[in-house]
Length: 213
Image 1 (cartoon, one colour):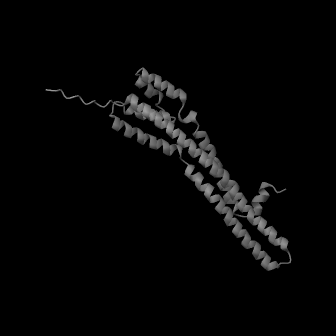
Image 2 (cartoon, helix red, strand yellow):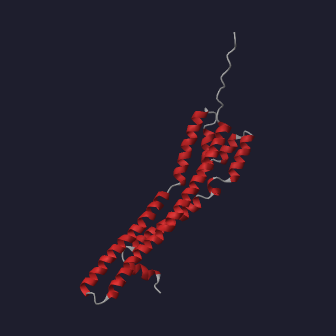
Image 3 (cartoon, rainbow, N blue to C red):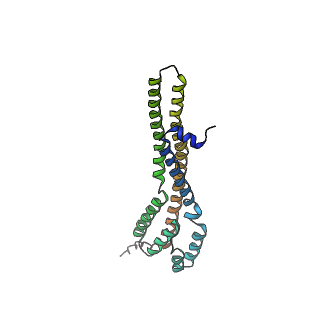
């Protein structure tokens, strides 16, 4: 039975960039899976503590609690506290801008993961084409008296296609799952922003009814 090193050597030089793609994809998946935990993005303890401080109107203590900005919820609350007392229009624009920054942070590296998932099978196809060219070149020199030579060359060429697909398929699936995770967290951050808008934005003046003369 062939070892992993044997498979790499049999597949030829294309197996090395495929291996690099697999390691890069694995690193991105592990980093995003750790970063996109709900407890790291929107800690319930932080949101609950800030909510209690808002009810008690202890805004300075809430700002101190979010001072480090270690997660998306803290950064969003910190921005909202800076806009306390602003009109709803100004407050909403500031929170939308903060939300866009958090979306960029949450979805970082996912585009690269998508590229790796797309490039890996193409590299595998390149290796297959290159291997087929070499296989038919060997047959042309040795003649058709040894069909095993052609079969072995084709099998070796197809190895790179299989390797590319092995990298691409799970990478594409996990990429889609991570995107769904980002969408869910973004929706939760939008709900948090709406709550902050209602709690901290200045109330719009109500039009006064005209007195009848």
